[in-house]
Image 1 (tube, one colour):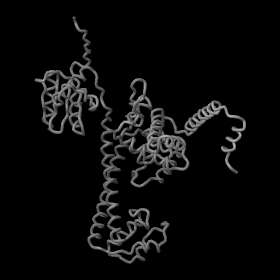
Image 2 (spheres, helix red, strand yellow; image 1 turned 90 degrees about the horizontal axis):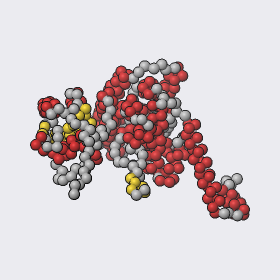
Image 3 (cartoon, rainbow, N blue to C red; image 1 turned 45 degrees about the vertical axis):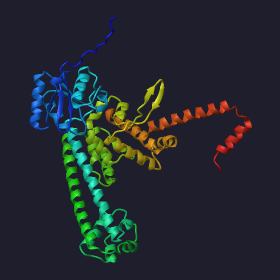
Image 4 (tube, helix red, strand yellow; image 1 turned 120 degrees about the horizontal axis):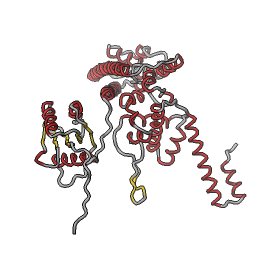
Amino acid sequence: MKKNTISLQIVNPGAAGIDVGSRTHVVAVDQNVENVCSFGVYTKDHHDMIAYLRNHNISTVAMESTGSYWQTLFSDLQSSGFEVILVSGSQTKNVKGKKTDVIDAIWIQKLHSLGLLSGSFLPNAIMQELRTYYNHRQHLIEQIARYTLKMQKSLRLMNVRLDVALRDITGRSGMNIIEAILAGQRDPLYLSTLVDIRTKKAKEEIANSLHGTWRPELLFELKACLDLFHHFNKALTECDEAIEKLLVRYTPERTVTKEQEKLFRSYNRKKSKNAPAFNIARTAYQFFRTDLFAINGVSHNTVLCLMTNLGDDIYKFPTAKSFASWLRLVPNNKISGGRILSSKVKKGKNTIATALRHVANSIGNQKDHDLLPFFKRIAFRKGRVAAITATARKIATILWNMIVKAEHYSSKRIIADQEKFRKNRLKQVQKNIHNLKLSQEEMNQLMQRCLPKV
């Protein structure tokens, strides 16, 4: 008896699969193990691999990698005319048999030739350059925070509690006092006169916090940390200048009215610590054709993150839902037998999603915000963590509509959604009351309990 067989159609006849490693790259051009070849990671090895692929009439390549080992090879293959896609390990993990680099490469080649692999979302060349600057900028901010804490520790071990007297020891007042201490000044009364006149704490309290034991090893550590603090701040300024030059070069010129210019200057005056040195509000408006700062809670660092990590690549997402899904801010529903087995959000690190979560968290701490009722509603049902994720998804949807559709931010739509939810809840309450079949006396008692006490 003849068995029924189903054969899959080859979609990419000239396909190759590459398993990218830290020391070697394994290349499969067909399903024959003898044709699997291993190459090194140097530039010469990349050229040899390109010649090998051309000899086998390869036109499209799929590669699977962990870490950042794929980036240089990806660029070399693309510049040589190959169609290259980067696939995640979740698409290629179901290989049969003992797992080896050779078997992985053959499996990747087979799936790619059958058209069963989808490439990961990758930014364009300009966004990759901006992203590199942004990641370096974040590293500099982490170092600044690190040495700020070390300066606080050095002062605290000398019982100089400047961190209690001042909100920020790296402000103008704190820097004046630390530099005077390192210059040899020990008089607390004199040091207290170096604070800015806008400081809320009294000079007597600041003077009391400056009585300490001046240990030489801790003074040495304090000076070293202060020098490194200034060094990284200077590097941060240089990085901001590089980002500004690149953004200005690729940002289209758009006319800005006097009212808008005045508004952008007001945004610039409200900058938080470690915010970009340039006027990012004006640049963002010219870049995205809309005012993202109209959303209360969106900071300068959030807009900078969006501009340097995504930019105009946001137009590649056809809907706001696909954009939120790429950010991993939506539930990953696993359905079997008509039931939802799990709806947890996918794990993964996305810089933009992290920035939007910070915005959502700040909204939860505010007293008056358009999205605060939504945040509280989710927090009451599922907790604060779920509310932060849900609010971040809502902000991502608003940002996509503002940028892609060139819409201005309007709170009317959010208020309309809240009113719609209120009406639905009211209908539900009416239905529950009807099902309970309450008497007139019970209804009166219920109304008395619900009415606020005067």
